[in-house]
Amino acid sequence: MFERMSRGWRITKQSFQLIGRDPEMLAFPLLAVVVGFFGVVAVTGLAGALVHTLDPGMFGDMTDHADENPAVQAAGLGYMFAVTFVVTTSSIYANFAVLNTLRVRLDGGDATFMDSVRAANGRLGDIMKWSLVVTTVGLVLHAIESACERLGGIGSLIARGVAALMGGAWNVVSFMVVPAMVMDGVGPKQGLERSVEALKKSWGEGLTAHVSMGFVSFMACIPFFVMLVLGGGALANAAETGGSMWYGGGLLGLSFVYITVAVLMLSVARVLFSGTLYRFATTGKIGDEYDDDLVSGAFTPKD
Figure 1 (cartoon, helix red, strand yellow):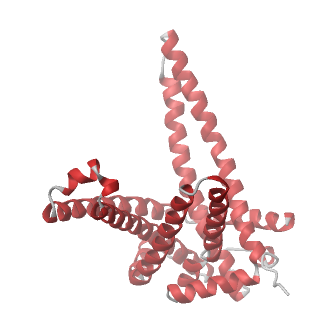
Figure 2 (figure 1 turned 30 degrees about the vertical axis):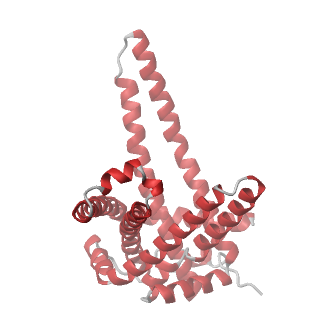
Figure 3 (figure 1 turned 180 degrees about the vertical axis):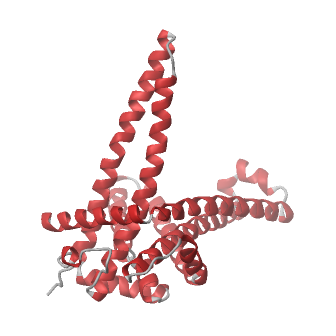
């Protein structure tokens, strides 16, 4: 297990090195945030206009008697589904573009930002189909968790544990669906099947990917919290003594710049990691950007 984690860490390191070669990949998650934001605004505006047209009095019911009105509950559920779908689609779209850049790189080519955007646009239908599946599963799991909270006592704890296991299993099984869609050019259904096949070959290595990225994420957050505490302390001290607030304010500003860049790099690295592991699991080859010998032990066939 420790050896697998070590390999996972080294592959993660190479994923960050690939980001260093193609830093424009960091623009894809930013694009997802922008598209998701305007998508949510559009959905909210459309939902508000639709509700006002059908029943102007429903806005008052939403705040006064929401728990007692099935129509309001249905409208709220529909709105939540639409918003989640928009955000999920924008995220998967960005991941698809990142993985397309990786695919072209591993094949010895050089994909520009717009090349990967065009590739994602060309598969927008499949991206939306998979987003629909992810959104539906996510809301079902959320509904199960909400139902578990109402059980109370030991039953609630057991039900929560089962729900958590279901969510974890789904995350593992679906870990390499988008890489399969990009690398093999298949749809969501085939992508899920191939993700499961890759998982069967190397269930331990899939866990290693999550563990190693979790460790990197934890370590990356430490400087942020240090700067946040130091900056907040400096501002509090300056407020008491009447000193300059430039130092504390500068640290706080730097901390938020740092965490923004860190989150972008971690999100892209996680996607690159999943794509690299899937590529090797299905073909036995990585490409010029990675060391085949390094990753050759990352997927050990199970008897």
